[in-house]
Length: 311
Length: 323
Image 1 (cartoon, one colour):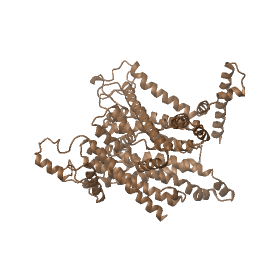
Image 2 (cartoon, each protein chain N blue to C red):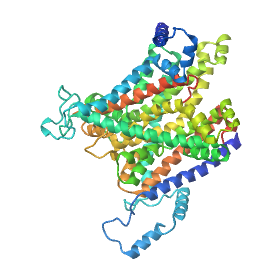
Image 3 (spheres, rainbow over the protein chains, first blue to last red):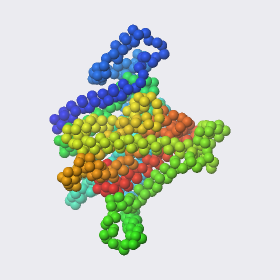
Image 4 (tube, rainbow over the protein chains, first blue to last red):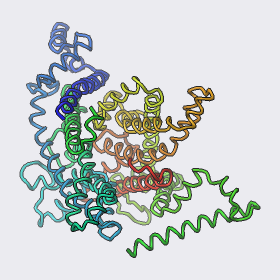
């Protein structure tokens, strides 16, 4: 098990290098130099100094090496647009907000989605199965900007006097509720569907019939055998679902006016703040890579068969 | 239990209908119904699949809904007399009515036509990006699976590294690189980080198919590699490919809507469902129908495509249910 974990962790190093390289090469393709396009003409000597300071006079692979070094030492360089702001500052300011929102959304998705999946699997082809799967399918099909707007329209505008929820901002539990629900709905539907599918498959296994046949109470069969075995696919889904959360946060944060990293990312792209764009892209990618690592290790614990096959 | 039985009875009825139709066709062609030889000759994989698909009520309804949506976006701008770009402030923000079934926007433009036109853009981008994703994924996956060995290992390691990366930041970066948003840059942006799953599944398919006896036989009789690949392997993946088209399409349409919604969409006065929804969002407190209608169109497309994909999977490959 230990060698599996170590091998898996070491494997993330080339992965991170590759992802940074790809982002780096993409960023280089964006037209326009951050300094040369400014309205005030910059004298040639200052231009040279600027180029030297930011290593722009070096060939691309050296720039890449500098950037990797920066990532390794957690220094993502200065912001090109906001004076006296580092990319680190931007991330420190905005990332915790997104992290919190994402955690709330994930919590909501798990707490509602998994029981929903369990319920509809145990009561397959009954009204409660149809209702919960109908809800899941509708939640899956409605775009997150629509769900956000619906929540806003009803809970923050129409029934404002009852709920007292604000339409935007970030501070205090009242501002957390609606965006967390809006962001969590997409992963919720995935959790519910995967849990249901896995449960139905587990319920058909021979060992479940054996457990029933030897006279175990049904609650115990479900708790001991069914749940445990069918939550494995759900755990593995949690990694890729982080991508859903990240994608959704771009929308949800801009609708609810939340000062998170997704909203800032869009601002940095349109404002041509390349170092911030690059920094956030690398950060989000590393988040995914680490989540995949965590899921693989967890999977190794839950299902020993996978340890030898995946490195 | 009652519902179960009714469903089973209905399904049986459908199957009876289907076999009845088969028999009818057989008689029409001058063969005796129940002529086993004739039935066998005609029961190809696709015919079988079509029968199974027709027996699946949800899939049939979804397929009709999907086609109806296509008909709506294609026909309405043709048949309507409304000019989708004519500004008329006297008619601004009209709620849905007989004259304007979907109402009008802030410039008094008829939304029925604009939603249909926007649907053309969204669906066209959706199909183009889906085919681009399939193209890249199929090429990558079949090279990896067909050649195998070290190359396969390297290509799959590369895919593993990219696995799970969110497509949206990379799509945004791509649009920034192009500097403009139009049909084709949008297609590239939506393709660039979305083809990984297709490539992986295609590789798996090719590797499984490679082990079949008929492929070995083809090799044994001296068939060249391209004949094996294009005659024996790729045609057998067609079912999976068709399913994947319907699985990818909703995601791509949604991706386009997301990009449009955060302000990286097709330029006005042209519109897609995403840009229409964004327009509607800015007035959601006073005129909620402006965002409701384009969003429901997106939901319509996603749901119908999803159930069509589900039905196709059951019809084409009843055993494989993992993807």
